[in-house]
Amino acid sequence: MKVAKSVGIALAALFGSVMFLAAPAAAAPAPAPAAAAVGEVGAQASFCATGRVESWATNLPIRAAASTAGALITTAQPGYQYNCDGTVTGQSVTACGVTSNVWVRIVFSGQWGYTYMACLNDV
Image (cartoon, rainbow, N blue to C red; front, top):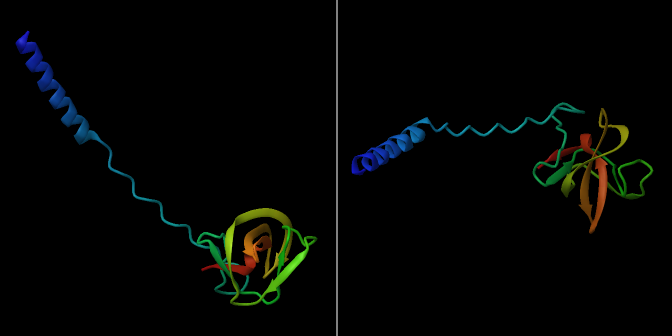
């Protein structure tokens, strides 16, 4: 009985070490996706990856809905920055040289506003 117990302990120790040696290595994290080029040379579409975006367009409309029918809240100029909360699907529009139905949701004066993804850069 004592021998069987000792063999069992030895096998458990061996099995544990084999399991340890056979454990898979941790996978490397996937690289961050590159931003897609849109509009003018060097411009990049915003996906609100950083939580902050910057307009590179002149008179970029910020609307109350992701549609050109949404009430106009304000217009952004090149260099204006806003906090953002992701993207939404809305009306398809052509802006900044790109046709898309993806809009970025931003915070403006305590309310949600929506504008064209193609005219913003993540900052």
